[in-house]
Structure formats: C-alpha cells, structure tokens
Length: 134
Image (cartoon, rainbow, N blue to C red; front, side, top):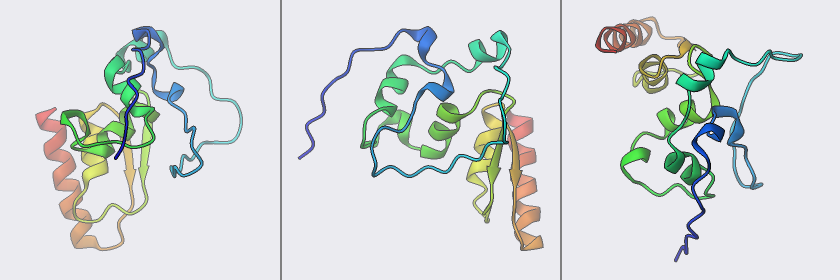
C-alpha cells in the first residue's frame, strides 16, 4: 500500500540535527525558539550530534514505519531537532516521562512541566536513573 522509494544516503557530514526539515503540509511538529539569531553550535557539538546517514535519510520519509530505530519516535525527534546540550521542552510530562528520560539519555537538557506533585516526583526519579545509567 505504501511504495517506498529508497533515497540515496546523504553524506555523513551533512546529517546534522536541524537540516532535517519538514517538507509535507500534513506533518505537525512544534518547535519553540528564542527570538533572534542563534549562534551556530561549536564544531565539537556538531560532530557529536551527527545522525546516522540511514536514520537521517529515513527521517525525511513522510511516513515512519516501525523498525529498530523507530521504536521510540521521541528519541528520534530529539536527535533530529536538537544538538547535544540543547534544551528540550516537554510541556506535558505525565507519568511516563519518556521525553525527559530520552533527552537526558541523548545528552540534552530538559525542562519538563507537570502539575501533579506526585507524578512530578516519579518523573524526577526516572530522570535521575537515566542520568546515572547514562
């Protein structure tokens, strides 16, 4: 039902997080950014944030089919849209804490918002475990 055209692999040095841009009107992704120009990240941050060329190419597909790299789409989105040490915002953290844990696991900082103090404590515990496991 879905004929996938295999795109050529991009050059590895071009597979940086913010070059994967939305190209289809049916896609939805909210990206918050401070007003003004953002200085480019340091070269060592760019090289540490490079994305596997196959994952990068597959991320440009309009439909993400489940595979080994896509079992957690949040981690994939974090890798594609942020550099190491960037801040990832999770406005609705909830009990699962998937985004904060993935952000920490991938070397990003995270601001997570949760209104329920008990669930917030569970989220903090999960993030602390992710920090120690690395």
